[in-house]
Length: 310
Image (tube, rainbow, N blue to C red; front, side, top):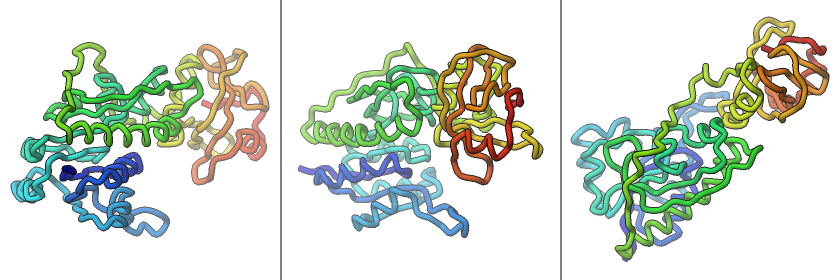
């Protein structure tokens, strides 16, 4: 028999999974997502991507501000769900919610647990220079991404892959994995194994200060930070390029040969010296403007070799 599912998710990453669950014939009895938020120039309230899809399917949508009240727990129990599926929901599930579905709560997490538990596993994997990551279906428990794993899929992180490209690669892979996990759960043969106590790493939220590039670091580390944070939130330089201090995001870069004083522009092509080695800046985004090739940015600012970019 198809499962009765409560789906809990918010961003684009969760959308394919909801579509797979509906397409797989399961009964989605409720969709929980974050409340609409102001967006765009007019700051009109915009529903989350998950809410937009749920409404197209005609599914009931709930946007509670907390799940920690008895009222919220009672509402959740009233769905009489077999299982809850959680994908980047953005709210902590208290024990009363975790215990409500007959078969528990399954979380789709974008890492190879126990590496990169937490909020930003995709960016952290790229920033750390990992060569591999993946997606995992985990049975949730009160700890932060500590539950046993039922299924996982691995994917290579290529040397030039950005966080955005990895995100887009993992979205359909995760949706397919969760669909298969629900199929196994439906048949009664989804097996879970405890996470290893070794290799634990935490993917804390990206802070504004972390996104600021330190060109005194080796080029490899700077490069991994740039690609890990591209396109969002975007690694950035703070420099005075003739108009006072300004923020310039670096969305694309390449490894390059050369040496010089860290933070110095070495040529018109955008080669900048790091603490060890160099990078060539390819695509940048000045504050308040769109992304552009570095050469266009450089011509507009009349940047000369020797300019200090940090």
